[in-house]
Length: 191
Image 1 (cartoon, rainbow, N blue to C red):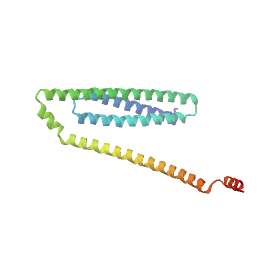
Image 2: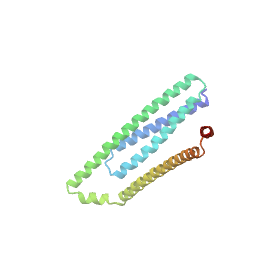
Image 3: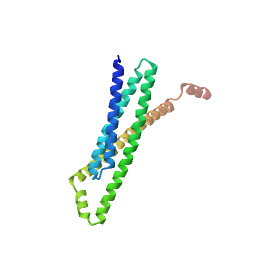
Image 4: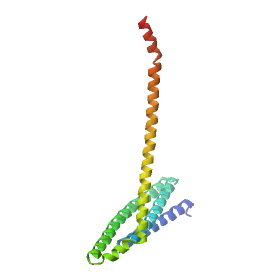
């Protein structure tokens, strides 16, 4: 009879395979995506979600391996976990390549439409509410990123100022009060 741990490991492995297959299907959809950018972005958000779920399941499997009593079981599960990690990296590479190919295809299609007199429809499409919302969202995200970087820089500056201020106070105290042994030696020289 299989132990409870074995069942959990098997279920985790099946979920990893399920997510892997779903990611592969989405990557294929991206490869075949004729556009527009909003459809591509929708596919990409689904891939990101599945990759995150897959990453969490792989981490769960690794944790289960560490909890195994027998070293042979532990090593077998860790080996399977490493195999899933390599497959996940392969999926990420395929996803990037599919994205690049799709974006290039969409750009070429738009370029052809512009050159072949379809520029009014392309311009109308680009001015749609969706693209304006996306542009606004991108700008907002960039501004938030800049704000976070500035806040981090201010925090680091405050720490530096605090450190320098503390060191300056220490140096001032030592200069004003001096070392008691040095003061004593100075008196002896005068007398």
